[in-house]
Length: 435
Image 1 (cartoon, one colour):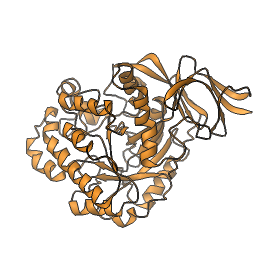
Image 2 (cartoon, helix red, strand yellow):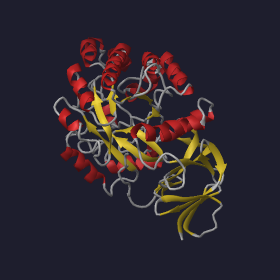
Image 3 (cartoon, helix red, strand yellow):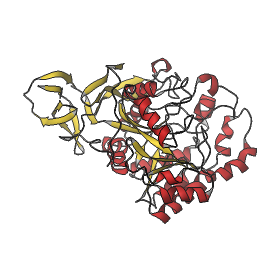
Image 4 (cartoon, one colour):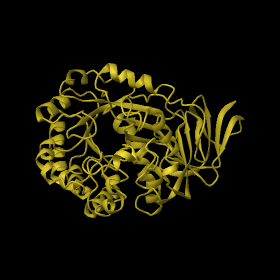
């Protein structure tokens, strides 16, 4: 007997939508097509689109450390509520995930507590470069995270000689928070107390571009893979699109949806993130990148903070906003508005993460692959409301927004973990496996 049949859906297979049924057994896709066998459970996907399990390659779930803001359990609930089947989680926790002992602790904390599948970044420091060469076969490790500019937490590798050593010793993709620490220091005088509009002035375009130039130069020197996170400037788009190959880059849904000064006028410090949201000319260049398949991934940079902290006077307010639950509604709305195709979105949240990071058996609806699916209704609207946010922070920058394109079910290893907005079953997520 089968475990699950997904029937009557339009399935995204080989780059197109096909009316097929999917049979699942033992967590794997057993068969695609006409299915006559009985199953313990069936999911009727009539008028819905069955996508491969969507992956959010940048989340901060704050555990260990700031578990009043988020933890691995609550963050994973937010993920499956938003149709996300797997996350990459960041190491800037307290203590940071920057040695094997802390990495193993993170895996232990995740076991039987996370609803979605997961992988963790290993944090680079100036002192742990010798360990970076030994991470190739570390279970559940998606890559190495390098903070070239200071942000939340105390993981910072600012000096070029240390950045050089990180790349020289890296055995996995190095994902980079790319801001130039020296420029951040010099620019501190430009911060206007109480005025979050000065955030992109302090964390300037040149601050981002200077760092990204350096990262590309060093990565190419050692022929290593660099993945530049949350691109925030048009200059970086133009530069990085000329340096493809080993260099890949991400854009966030926030940078594709809101822009300055409007976002700061409306949201104040709730729109504050690193690197910052900038003016519309950057936003337009991000869309140019998406339309022309220049960027490689969309990651939410889910970085929650409690309202009591976000409402502090700038610059005492922390940077970051939640996003794992809203990534798919935001991007499906953009698909419905004709800003990108469904194929382009699947490349960004399924296929490219698999190719760049070497994830096994994910990203495609194929027989023998893991039975992870994000089931969506392209014609249904969803209104984002703070009270429906699963993250402990309890707010979204998109509160009150209506998006067309709604996650209807999240299926992981053949088990329905979210249906019609309700989270089901137990947290049974597993570490992702890398080739």
